[in-house]
Length: 293
Image 1: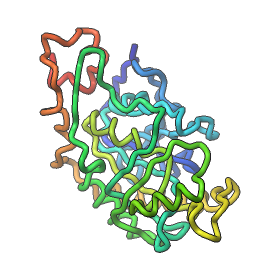
Image 2 (image 1 turned 30 degrees about the vertical axis):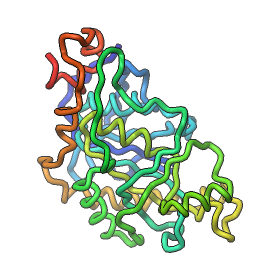
Image 3 (image 1 turned 180 degrees about the horizontal axis):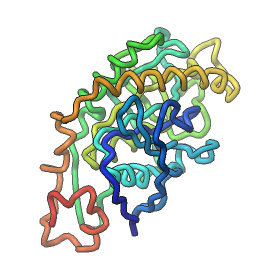
Image 4 (image 1 turned 60 degrees about the horizontal axis):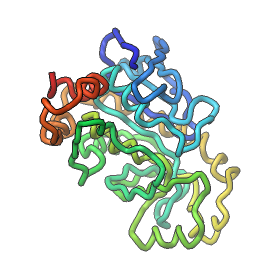
């Protein structure tokens, strides 16, 4: 079952990561509680205006950080935002750095993913409907470019591009794992960009990540034992810088999208409609209604 949202479409969504449980600067606030066919999202969704632009904010781990990375109801989160009309989804993510040049407190707007997760549902499809979305470029390049421009207008050091390695967690890496990921050319390591990016693509949302480095992970001699205390010490500063970047992004966001994200399902749906169970079409209505009546 899904509850309905009857308000005006909110086209921009923000997913807050560790340390970002509420969005500063939002005005005209209202809260929305939605239920989806994939369960309830992580928390109440807050809708407000950020520098005059309407935004839907959802804390990924719930307020008070109650939800493990492996327990985040990602399908419910993305589906609920789709119900609101979100077209562009910005994810703020705390990460460890796997490269010397990416120092703690730096920001990264990655352009690739290596997915090492094992326990997370990563598609909306099944139950009689098969879809294979293109995923060679997991982040929207148009949105990522805009996000990088906005981040560069802050006082933080910004790195454009790089590979985000997504680990299962919740434990941090062993030193051997950290060195292995470095040998693969990964830039940063975190626990949430996948399956968010896959599901956002299936939902035809533009998706980009603003990753904030909190530490050097286990490979670095000075960070050989990453601790929660070490990570938390940098989170408040990272959260403030992230919010500053998001505020600077709003005025430069164009009204229309011209990327392939907006039609990602157009050539992805494989199953003939006459063979798809009606309950599956109904369940996935916000995603497939424009392709299946």
